[in-house]
Image 1 (tube, rainbow, N blue to C red):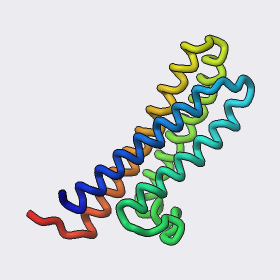
Image 2 (cartoon, rainbow, N blue to C red; image 1 turned 180 degrees about the horizontal axis):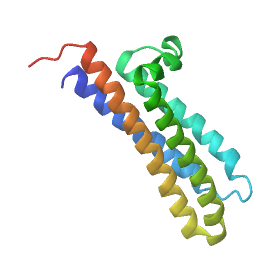
Image 3 (cartoon, one colour; image 1 turned 90 degrees about the vertical axis):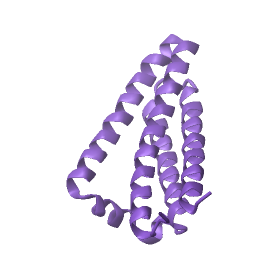
Length: 141
């Protein structure tokens, strides 16, 4: 297994772990305090991003500086990604409030939504890291 394949496998496992964790945390009914829970879930997503970065580059994300990395993506991409992330988290908070009224079925829906969003954002970040790694490291043919 090549170094890149090993990193990809570790990344998939990390994303799956964080997505399941986010889904599980979201499933817990907390009427009236869904927005603060989204802040905790956002912190978990940031931990996922730093873990993926460390898998690929063996350095802490803080030493590189998140702003420098996001600037590499370009301002338009940063604005679009940031807006999409905020909209997704806000929508999840609203849906979570509504699904708390439904009971266990609603909690399951909420867990699926939160886990899917974390997985989607994690996969997007992983693709970016994979692209950067591929550019930095020469790959065997």
